[in-house]
Amino acid sequence: MKNILYLFLLISQVFFAQSSFEKGNALYQKGQYQEAVQTYESIIKEDRQQSAELYFNLANSYYKLNKVAPSIYNYEKALVLKPGDAAALNNLKFAKKLTIDEIKEVPKVGFARLIQSFTSIFDYNTWAKISVGISFAFLLSFIGYYFSQLTLTKRIYFIGMFVLLLALVLSVASGMSEKNHFDNNRPAIVFAELSEVRSEPQKAGAAIFLLHEGAKVYVTETLGKWKKIELTDGTEGWIDGTTIKEVK
Image (cartoon, rainbow, N blue to C red):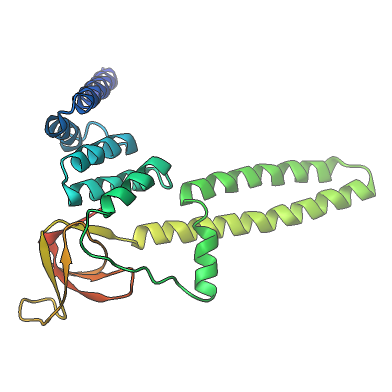
């Protein structure tokens, strides 16, 4: 009985969430962006639905209202749930044009750059699927090797198993690397109109530089209400945690 009640509640939540989502879409189409924002935010607040499409539409609504930080934040949220989404990436570029800060990205160099460039081809979920596919192919090769009667065929299957085993190790390692990067990567968006980044986690610390609304930072450490951040150009400092909002 409890299981039936739980299933009924779950179906009800999904139904109402979808209904609210469609309502938000209708409001957006009518140009009622503030009302659309309120509808989308209510879905997130009640935890009835978490999807890339929801955050993407919410970001579009904020963008139409010229609200820089919320639009960038929600595009980033959409990309967390759906990495590499072309529409979100494209709209994010337009939203970033509304920001004041121009932060250059310093690329990694050397062997670490090569590894990151390779593993970032896919997200960790895709690497996991690739690993499963290779494992299945390895199993088929093993079956072929075991039942094959010809020496030449056995050699071919054996070589295939060896190649697939190497590919499996590579895909698993890449997936683990991307999962580790995902877990340790803590992007955040500056929501305050103006934030001072200091040399120490206290107001008495010297102000190193200023950040404006919509700037993207990466949190590397937390100390009380202060967060140590790093920019894509390698610059570091401490910022009041209340002025930023972490994407994940």
